[in-house]
Image 1 (cartoon, one colour):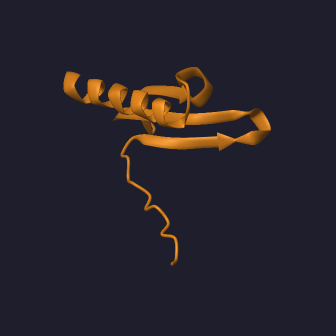
Image 2 (image 1 turned 60 degrees about the vertical axis):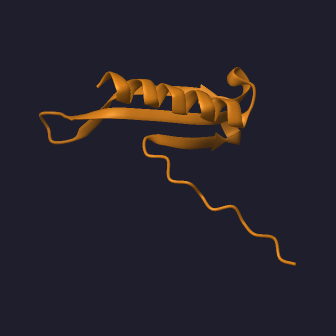
Image 3 (image 1 turned 180 degrees about the vertical axis):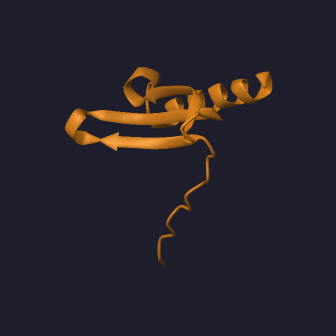
Length: 75
C-alpha cells in the first residue's frame, strides 16, 4: 500500500523558515500590511517563533497561530 503524503495546509500570514546554514528553524508571522509612500507594502506586525525556543516544531506553530489569532481579534 502506498503512503500518502500529507497535504500542505495554507496558513495565511504564517511561513516556515528552515535555513541550516544559519541554524534558523521556525515559523514567521506577518500581519497587518500597510502601503508605504513609495507604493510597496510592509507588515505592521512580525514575529519569529523558533522551534528550540518553543519546544519543537508543533509547539512553535501553535504559538504562532495563537499570536496571529490574538492580532486578528484585536483588529
